[in-house]
Structure formats: structure tokens, C-alpha cells
Image (cartoon, rainbow, N blue to C red; front, side):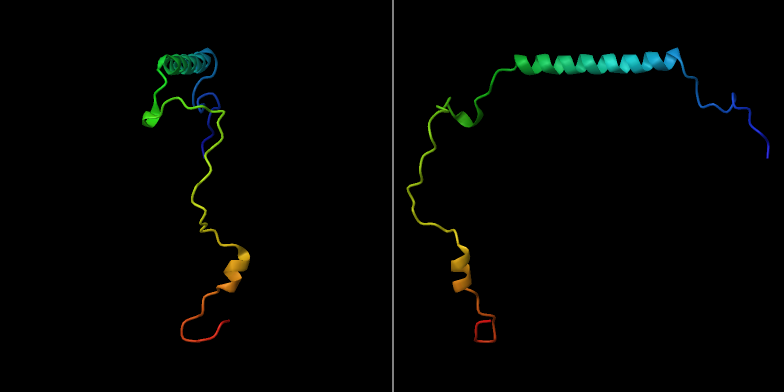
Length: 90
């Protein structure tokens, strides 16, 4: 097997050209980030769903319907389903 010269076997050069590419990419990312920040601050606040500004200090309204569909564990144990075909409770 032939031996390779380590200098010729390198993938690419390191040094200033690589540094310039990395710094250029970082600068472009910062410019895009700043542009998005400016764009977001310029946009007006949209009224979503036609809801007007509400009083955030008001408490939520209490429900008027008092029927509850919540099943407690004791209710669940008392109304266990009867397996089909057996006729008795487990």
C-alpha cells in the first residue's frame, strides 16, 4: 500500500478564508435576526377573532349550568359495566 503525504491528503486549508466564511455567515444571521425583530415590532397588533380589548382584571364568569358530567371514583365503582354474556358483576 502506498503511503500518502499528509500535506496532499488534507481536505482543505484552514486559516483566514475559513474564518472569513464563518464571520460572514454569523454577520448575515445577525442581520436577518435584527431585520425580523424590526419587522415584528412594526406590525400592528391584530384583533384576533373580532374580540375587543377586554378587562384582564375581571374574574372569569361562573357557569350557570350546575349539571356535572364528571365521574368520581366512587361513582365509577358503583356503576361498573356488566360483562356481556355472564349476567353477573365481576
